[in-house]
Length: 114
Length: 114
Image 1 (cartoon, helix red, strand yellow):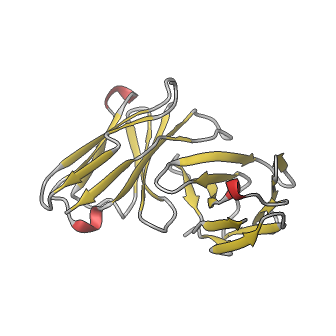
Image 2 (tube, helix red, strand yellow; image 1 turned 90 degrees about the vertical axis):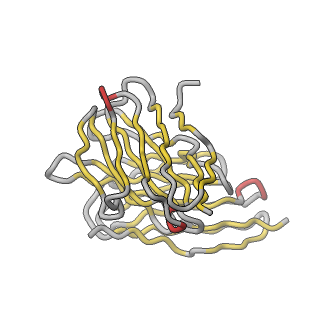
């Protein structure tokens, strides 16, 4: 399967714990995005990487959130001291460089904070 | 800030009927995407519209883009139950800082009744 891969698919954690999600983009895709989607809403932009450089972070990304993309390959999204409001589906997408390139989304990681 | 609005938010229609979903956006862009999402699943790409006047068709779905009106439509012809899902439009934006990101609409939840 050469699509965008996300792990884990589901995560249940207690409030206050730290969690980390992983995204493996389509190989040779330079761009990588993280989005968050809550129930009944559209995906909201969190952050964008071009290769290993994190070029933009949304205001939604509080200090408890950090994302990395070492060596411009896979990416991780870490949430520290989780809160119930962090419960959502976290989606990763990747695309090629260029002006008219389509982003492909992974299956997402569904986080439930109890 | 870019806003993307869809209407209707909810649509319940009989099988065999036609209907149109509208996507309005608030800034200039000539790249718009339509996605389908089934409950608990990720986003499936339906159409990529990359220029004013672009029209794409796949099966019972047809999408169009009018960049001057900042409007895209997704037309459903002779709906069938399998089309029941949530449909999102997304506008591709580019900032002078070199960031690309999709801004998603609110989504239209479609239910096709037998």
